[in-house]
Length: 111
Ligand SMILES: [Zn+2]
Image 1 (cartoon, rainbow, N blue to C red):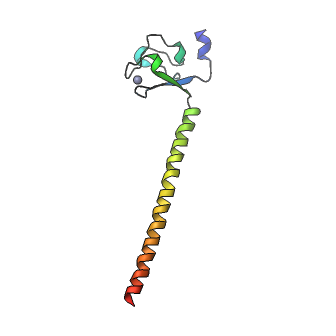
Image 2 (image 1 turned 120 degrees about the vertical axis):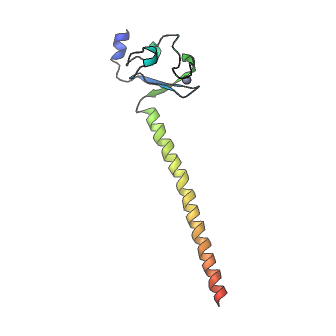
Image 3 (image 1 turned 180 degrees about the horizontal axis):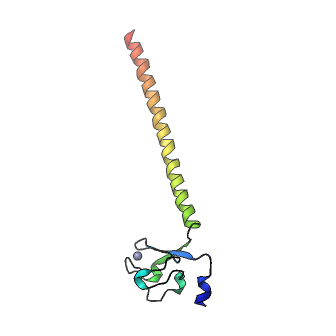
């Protein structure tokens, strides 16, 4: 049973909701002698988070590496850029308008 699981091409990763540690099945867990390729479901019941010793129940499925989570990270990065760009545009437009207004006022002042 466990020997077949090693051949499973895609294994879900699990993230510790307490500290953010991500259990990656491809790497296993050195500190608990968990061999690479061990699915999270096959970890011993008494397995704990190597960082904060949270129980297995504190972990949440974040999907296989390079798919769902990677997409989320890219999406978050994209949203961050999209949020910044309009603000910078507004700042540029406002700054340009303010400069034009000041220039107009200074011309008036010279006459
Ligand atoms: Zn943890």
